[in-house]
Image (cartoon, rainbow, N blue to C red; front, side):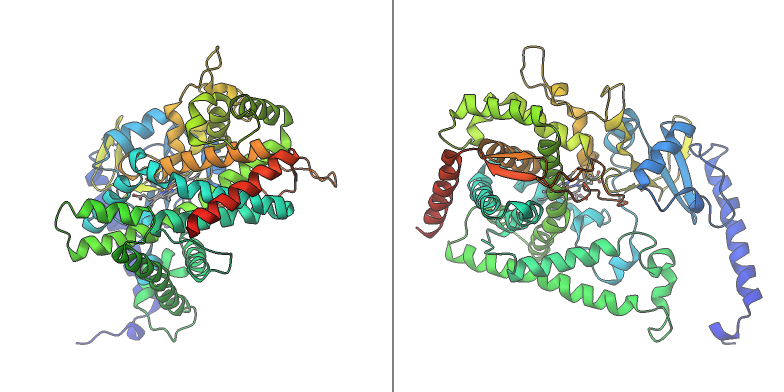
Length: 519
Ligand code: HEM
């Protein structure tokens, strides 16, 4: 007897779906041994809590509201996927950090599988390829390695200052270019020479497709994975061609810069970068084909994971300067007391700039770029505080913890004073790390972010004054309602050099940077 899909009636299919649903419910009850899931709103059959997630506001806002009703750990069921949302830092560290062996996986994004994007680290499932690539980034971006990339960071920030000087109105685009070109330099030692650089435009297009196909509702196959097995000529199957295009584009965008880097490394002309750091480490041991591919994947993941995120934080930094002149004045006075206004600040000045350091920390807390991080997934059944969390659950640590009024009184206020002692010394706050995630999946780029935001902020405030826009337009302090990554709403501001001396310092720095590159 042969079966074909077309010989089945709608009733047959409905009966199978209903049976599967009830088998699942019974299986689930047995597994739970009477333990409840974390509390949450009652869902509807089949769709669960789909309607409890409003589409017109950021998911972190919806989660925060639900958290007020159901507590610091609650759960939702979306089309059969259990989502556990965690709102307190204690629970987040208990689960994602202390029990990281069980909570470091990711759920599959069906479109990514179809496009062959398993190399992309932030969404990669736990397994040997992720472990190898992750080790490379942890090694190549640890604080002692980051010191090697300071010259590249300084050159890129000098160029950024000169862009602000020439064309202050487009500061937001200059920030994006700063980050894009910096990541190409950090990863591959490639010196991008303008916004139309091929490596840059290619990886930007790849990042764009990846971002627009990551969420459950963005492409049909993410909600209904079985669609990938249906023929392409059926209506609604356009995602298959998109996946092929995405695959080819992504491969080109990670392989071409890799080849450029490898050639330079072989000729001994590659500047310091993460790729070179890793090759040096490998000379200490034998390296396999898998390890070479892991390095390609690791470097390829940097742009998509790190360019937009840091760009948005720096846009928030400009927003702060434009909105809060007293904060800018205080930071500028501190910088001037250290540099005398006769030179640009350096990394070595950092210990003497507690207020600037505190300002940078507060930017990361005040306008978190990734308010729900990247969801983790559990790889084993677990019980926490009497709640059952089955294998395959999605765990979301919501940013509400960095807006907690107990840890951060008046959390909406931008206040660098949170990180200063009574006598004005910088006081670190380990909780801020929550902005970079948890456990084994914590952002490996966090030390690069820390140094990039510091050196950019210090150089900008030394040489420019940022203020309200000349046309008197209002500056909206809110962020957009993107579901994963947020950024300030577009805003205008005035940016003027602080003095003729500041202009002179910028021109001299750019001249010196370009002559050292060409020498
Ligand atoms: C303000 C800037 C940034 C923020 C707020 C940020 C935040 C995050 C967060 C929340 C995660 C998920 C952590 C988790 O799953 O628990 C993550 C992952 C990641 N980030 Fe960042 N990030 C930033 C910049 C960067 C930069 C500059 C790079 C690289 C140059 C980078 C590379 C990565 C990578 C590769 C992952 C995936 C790690 C994994 O899944 O194992 N990030 N980041």
